[in-house]
Image 1 (tube, helix red, strand yellow):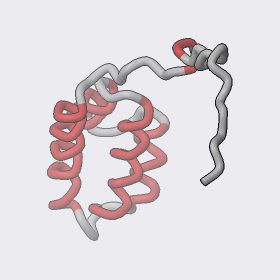
Image 2: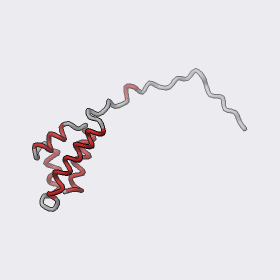
Image 3: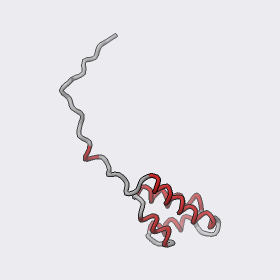
Image 4: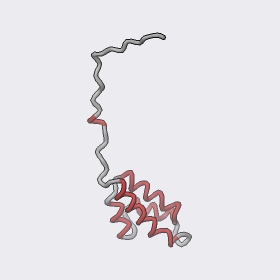
Length: 89
């Protein structure tokens, strides 16, 4: 078996500056908000144009409760919630 000697004077790079800050809501809270948004749109399936509704939400227009829920989400979760409207409405 070949032995590999690794240098001992090498330290790990500091990546603390490149790590994104934690989301403004916990995963559980984000999941609850997403569930509320989807519950709003499920009964409207087939009654609204889902892609047009997604564009309205992206523009900041839409039902007050949905916009409030989206405003409390991190950008990644808000994007996911809006995209989910297409598959649920």
